Length: 189
Image 1 (cartoon, rainbow, N blue to C red):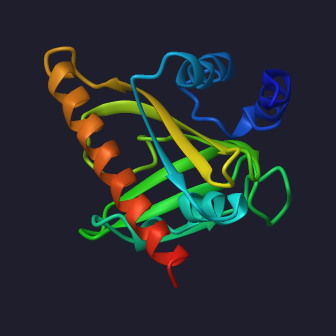
Image 2: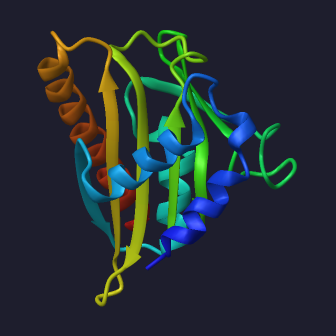
């Protein structure tokens, strides 16, 4: 188990990199909410080394998510200069050319990572104000790895919030089913 104090200390490192309209304390509390009372959550179990599962779910989205054409990282704001770390941005390009910018807020390989989806920097047109995804990786007694993603988000309209939640939950389940199939195919190679 990873202590919350460590999570908070990592978050303090990137206060300057957070979107101006979201205070650091708000983002910290939303990451904790993602862990304790998420809006959506799902898990998969894979028979692979934990480092491989961690890497695939962080860096290889384009290989198992149908709407993603490529993924790249910008480490300009990273706490570890020039390397993947807290403050790095994962920039996902969709098949239609739109981009989704997710700032890494927690990075503790191979145990967990979390990101803040910055809709002000993204060109994807989705009906949310923000989202935070928290991924936790646990080695199970049987040698398999459980990967659990928990997400919090804010719909951009109260009128459509119910539909947004349904759509978000379906997309998360679909993407994780695809990730599980992808990882299992790697395991069988």
